Amino acid sequence: MDKALQDTGQVRDRFRRPLNSPGFRGAKPRKHSRTTEAGMLIERDVPVPTRFGFDVYVDIFRPADRGAPVPPLIAWTPYGKHDPAPLATLYPGCGVKAEWMSRYTIFEAPDPLHWVARGYAVITADIPGTWYATTDAHFLALQEAAAHFDLIEWAGSQPWSNGRVGLSGVSGRLLVAKRKDVRAVKDGKTILLRDDYTGTVEAVNLPLLTQFIGPGRVPVVAPLALSTDNEALNVDGDRVAARIAVAIDADALLILTNVPGLLRDPSDPSSLVAETTLDEAETLAQGRMKKKILAAREAIEGGVDEVVIRSASGDPQVRTVIRG
Image 1 (tube, helix red, strand yellow):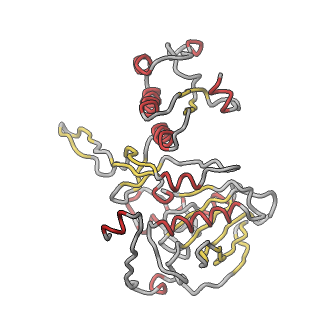
Image 2: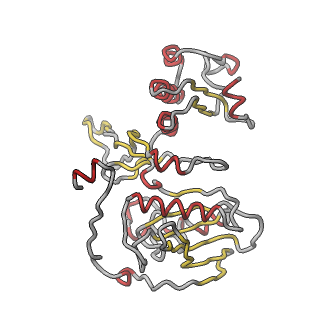
Image 3: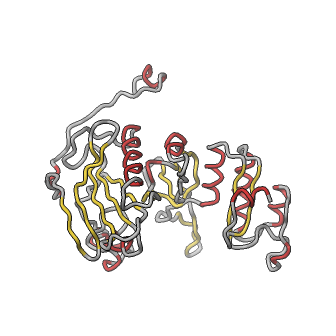
């Protein structure tokens, strides 16, 4: 990137010609269709307008009975919404059995047959600039993120949608993590586990996250992240919550769990600690509670005023739990 442009926050795009045509991977020119299959109403090549004047094309799978509005799940992909991905065939050693996926499943996306049967809609979208697109591709760029946002708003406003939109995957680098070096002892030797994909969050994409925070919108963030090498990593949910709380300058962080909270005696639910210091909490914590206290420390040291750890049972009002 040009240094002068970098200093002003601007970006100069550099494009190259495609290496082959969409037909090379079985894609066909856009043509809207509407069918009913396997209990699903399927619409293909639906154009969704964006702020840039071009359309994003999507396939929509939703319940054929057309009952109450349903929550949509969005898969945003460069790999082609037209191209099924039988993982058991493509990657025989991946551990995925052929019967676990239907023929409607594309690469790195939810299986429509599974999720539609459980009361969801699934939207698979070709990112701008790919597969007979009408614009250039801006991979992992701000324009792509803005077009994704426009699709989310569109999905939440359709008559068949209940407005509760979910994202599938690592969602535009919302979380960036460093992969852990996980080691184990085998035959008396310490070895590096190369098939372990866990990590620690190092950055939160605040500009993207703030687009999803507003009246009537609460982002639900899965504990998945991308490494700097573009590897999908599992990350600890409590520590993700702490990093996000710090990033958005939150006043308080509420961590819900399956026990009453931090206990002096883990076998005695009545030994709940009402208020304590971080040092004492780290002394008392056992088992999985240690990770929650670590998340609490990271939040407090990052500027969050208060961390509350409470049971997820019942239906507590968040403001009441924090104040009470």
